[in-house]
Length: 77
Image 1 (cartoon, rainbow, N blue to C red):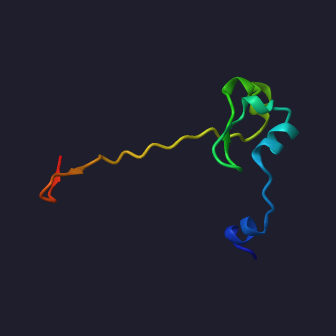
Image 2 (image 1 turned 30 degrees about the vertical axis):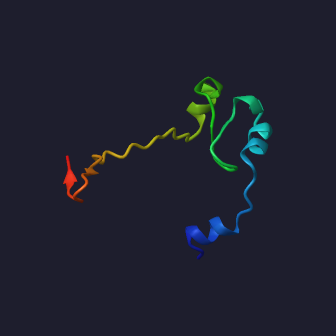
């Protein structure tokens, strides 16, 4: 059985604007984050279709405190 990474590497990626056009999303509504990743405004997500599928909307925040270093090289808080 192939691993997840093997399957992913064998897949031909399509540009996100091409995928959006296929789904009927206007190109001007797509906010690109590279060639293969994008954000789509929430008003374009159909609530009825969302209830029929397993759509996961997610975000990530790193709760790591930012530290700086002073001129002597010691960490300051």
